[in-house]
Picture 1 (cartoon, rainbow, N blue to C red):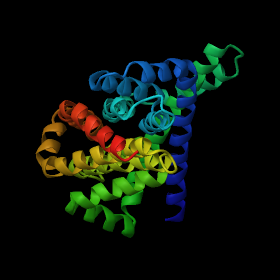
Picture 2 (spheres, one colour; picture 1 turned 30 degrees about the vertical axis):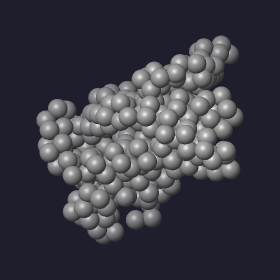
Picture 3 (cartoon, one colour; picture 1 turned 180 degrees about the vertical axis):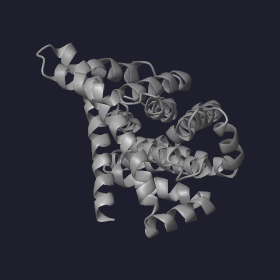
Picture 4 (tube, rainbow, N blue to C red; picture 1 turned 180 degrees about the horizontal axis):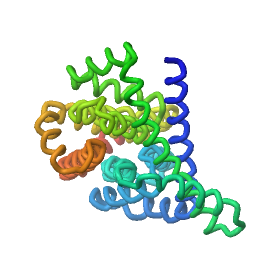
Length: 309
């Protein structure tokens, strides 16, 4: 059991390291444009949603974009109203990681690692950044293969069997597990990829996997909440809004998991790909449903903030 758990955490470390390398590559390639877009192109919620989606897809981290947004509000560069659309977009942008992981690349991850290492040894900045991206992507696929390979032996462990049985019986418990695990490791993408690995190995049902994904959406808010500690009231409201939106969306969707999982299972080649597609669809629908109310909500919060100055 100890050896399996150590291997499991090694794969999590590989994934998080790979994501960090990808973030460094993408952020260095587009950091100035990213911040400029957040500052200049968020004058209405729809633009904010688009910017939040693209920015998160670029840096591969909804937490990073949310923290940038919280910091921008704290320093007065953004008004609270400008942040609402960005927050809605971050949840959509982060789903790109699952879609990338669901691609049938086979053993291509070894080629990505080799090419990435070779390019990292070059002196040219563009080649170095391309190498960092390839190496990070290779780490992502390596971790995905590892999670799938570990699923069967870990299922044989008595504690794991108990947890899986309870998660299958209670979507709410599966949601809570996803939320807590994501809050601990600070990566909703890692939680979703682990669920995809369990699904591909037949250890977890798609319905339970979707519940875990919903929990990951909630757990990822912990980073922004921590970042808002000690900040101004507007910055704290930005973090609260992120948490509130994700929690309401997850709980509202919980009763629909069974029919949604049945539908999603028919739209993908593998259970893991079905979860990735389900994540995209859930976050897009949630954002579009909330978007018409975002301006009114932003004005209401700003009125409250103005009234307590």
